[in-house]
Length: 274
Length: 240
Ligand SMILES: Nc1ncnc2c1ncn2[C@@H]1O[C@H](COP(=O)(O)OP(=O)(O)O)[C@@H](O)[C@H]1O
Ligand SMILES: [Mg+2]
Image 1 (cartoon, helix red, strand yellow):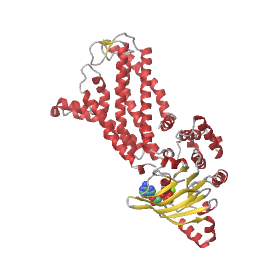
Image 2 (image 1 turned 30 degrees about the vertical axis):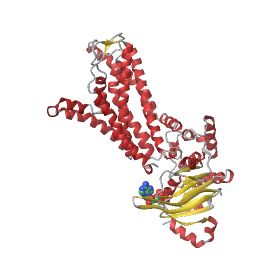
Image 3 (image 1 turned 120 degrees about the horizontal axis):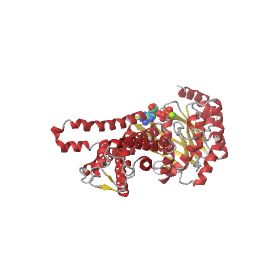
Image 4 (image 1 turned 180 degrees about the vertical axis):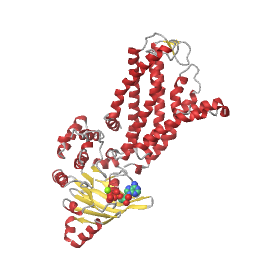
């Protein structure tokens, strides 16, 4: 298994896409810090939206997380769909005795790489904040009373990135099924994007029906969407009175189970692979 | 006995259609065996089964005594193969592709991996182009790189799927020379599929002729040459 992981890792990091990401992340962090530098002028310093070194990583990932969603779509389309459908994987399959292993190796390498890139972005956003944003000893957090210091703030940031990572893992569960079903890379990319768009749209549509379905059901529908969890759910989970935590954790588990298991079963039909 | 490949009663049925029916033959040590048949005869399907990429509906395949289905790891260790086309990762160089595949062999240590990759590149004459991306290789070079990857694990038998397809005369001769050299000097057994009798006659000592999923003739290439009538029948059969 360790050999298979090594080979998958070796191959993924020979791709230009990954290195383009590694270069793009610091740039994005600095661009975002520059933006917040300007935005701070019109925000009161005692609001959590006011960017300082300590809270900038969370502000910086808020939109960037969608970029990670897109990266994930692209990665699954290349390391699943392209490798399987083009026959590139055949010479690898000729060397392993259990096809399930390649599956797990791919998942391991995919999630490991995404984690590494996310941590890289966290680091970059601290560096960018350090150079471009105010240094304060205390700063407020979203939906939390009082203020926190730099270390407590860092722990909060780590938790935030941790949950953001879990949402990406959850999304990967869906993508892997698409990546194995779709016959072309374009198809796999399309399926991933459509899912993302759909997940953005339906909570808005549900918004019109609040008088009919009630606020509580609406909240459940809203937080059944992965990008909505990424957008608003994470701060709710980390707030003083975290509401709907059980629901969101359930949703995050549901996606990999709902889509990952069929993908597994599909794989055990060995003739699918050659 | 020196039986390298043992194919017994292999049948493959997909969605009610027989792609292969009761295919039985053996390949012995040191032979270069040709698998001859027109397009769609089932050659690639048979090679997929031989390499354990798909499961047979009935029958069994043994590589040096190891069952491809039940002892896949052991069977694969004795065998190198190109199935369908030599498809590599185009964004990596020839050398990187080989290193990547060699990483999958648990018997190769770090140091041995490097030297083995250089050795096989040398054998197929690609050492000079090893740092170029495979995406820039000609078909002939990809076939040779395919043989190089098949050689990585020091196999007893190598299976090639229509290696001459699309090659120019020079590429064809280079390929033939490499195969003959490996057979004579390293004692490697070959199973080579083709839809052209001419080209396979030149190097193969044995022939298995496949048509519509069934073995229609098997024996030594010499016998075929003697029976002039039969030859004509095959030419007609495979050129249909
Ligand atoms: N996965 C599959 N499902 C259904 N039919 C297939 C499949 N793979 C190959 N075939 C059919 O099996 C026959 C033999 O194909 P193949 O083994 O590729 O022949 P050859 O390599 O001799 O040209 C062809 O008619 C082909 O259409
Ligand atoms: Mg074929």
